[in-house]
Image (tube, rainbow, N blue to C red; front, top):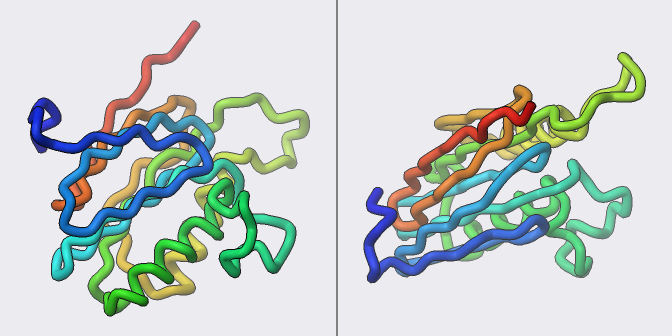
Length: 167
């Protein structure tokens, strides 16, 4: 992946956003803490997509039907929206390669029995991947450090940089 190609389109993905590209090579970059990014790629049609979900799932069951304005804040809704777009273009489940990043434990929990937002985000993403019968080809999740990722929509490649621990 050449991150310094002046001809390459670049996009910064903010929390609560998704980006889908077809036949337009783009490097999408984002910074993750407890949030999750799920990158999906189909080589046959040159489609790459990525989301930056803040929370695992929306409490309103109707939110994932495409009518909610905040749906991309949620990992489940973002993933289902991307899958819907892939399926509408004729991509089959078996052709989608998934990569998963983020879900750090950035905040101290109030109770030892609590599950961190990062862990909840990871669990939700893995559940959608499993429920949909998708192929997870790589992941870098959990732990105490944030991550910066660079996703190349034309190849599905991801470059990962772990953030330094702040003391």
